[in-house]
Length: 397
Image 1 (cartoon, rainbow, N blue to C red):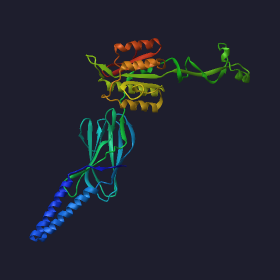
Image 2 (image 1 turned 30 degrees about the horizontal axis):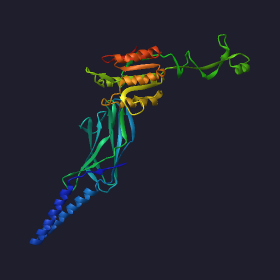
Image 3 (image 1 turned 90 degrees about the horizontal axis):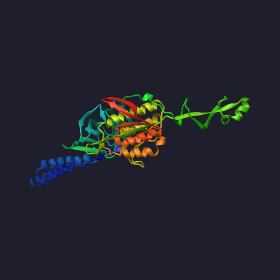
Image 4 (image 1 turned 30 degrees about the vertical axis):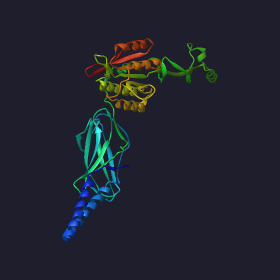
C-alpha cells in the first residue's frame, strides 16, 4: 500500500480571509450593538474552521495498491490490472478524478485519455471513495508497440466541500508495476536450412562427434571397432565382445549479432532507422531457436553497464531464456547510446571458437568484412539477414 500525500494549495488564504471577515463582523457588532452581526460572525468563523479541518484531515489516510511485478505482453495483447484505493478515514471523498500516465507502449481501454507531454498519455477516471471503505478500479491495457512503461504521475483531485478550490493528492512513490511489450516477430525465410556440424555440448541422435567422457552403454563389437573402445567388464559378463557407446554431440548454437549502427555522409554514427525491423527479425530468430531446442545468445551494439560495455546475453535455451532475451529487446530505445560495432566484433573475435554459427542483422560495412572473412576461414558459419521492402531471408556469407 502506498500513502497519498497532499499538495500545497491556496485554501489557507481563503480561510484567513474568512477569519478576518468574522473578526470585522464582531467589531462592527460591538460598535453598533447589532446581534445579527454576531450571528454572521459565528457562521463565518464556523465555516472557516470546518474548511481548515476538512483541508487538514481529508485524504491523509488514503492509500493505493496495484498488482506488483513485470507483465509481459505481445503487440495486440490486453491485460487487466486492478487499482485498489482504501480510505481509512471517516471523511468521504466525493466527485474526484484519479489520473495517471503511461507512454505510447500501451493504451488504456476503459477510461478517457488525453495527450500529455513528450510521449506520455494521461488516463483520467472518476473516483469517489466513501469513508472507511475500499474501492477497486480495473484498468485494461492493450499493447500497442514494443517498449516498457510504468504507471507514473499519479494524482487524485477532488473538490473541497467548503471552498471553490480543489484538493490534489499525489503518490510520490510509484507502484512496482511494469508493462513490457515484446517486439513483433517478422518472418524470415530460410531459417530451417541452417545446420551446424561442429563438436559441441548439444546432444544429437546423429552426429559424427562423440563425447568420450559420457559413456551411455554398450553394443556388440564389430571388426571396424578399435580395441581401445572394447568394454572388457561388459564383454566378460556377456561372454561376447562389447563396444562402448558414447553420447553423440555437436554445436548447434546460434550467436545473433545486431548492428544498429549507421553512418551519415560525413561519417557520424547514429542508430539506424531500421532499428524496429532489426529487433523484430531478432525476435523471430529467438522464437525459431527455442522451437528447435537450440541454444542461442544475443549481442547488440548498444551501451550497457558491465564489464563488456554493450548489451549481450549468455548462451542458453528454453522458454525462460527466450523471455530473458525478449525482455532485453523490449528495453532497447532509439535514444540509447551506441557502442562501436567495431569494438563489439573485436570482443567476439577474442572467443570466436565459442561461436560456430553467427547470424548477422543490420548493415554489413566494408570495414567489418575483414572479421567476417577471418571467421569463415576458422570454420565459423556466418549468415546475414537480407531484405527487400518487407521481405526477409537469410543468406550465407
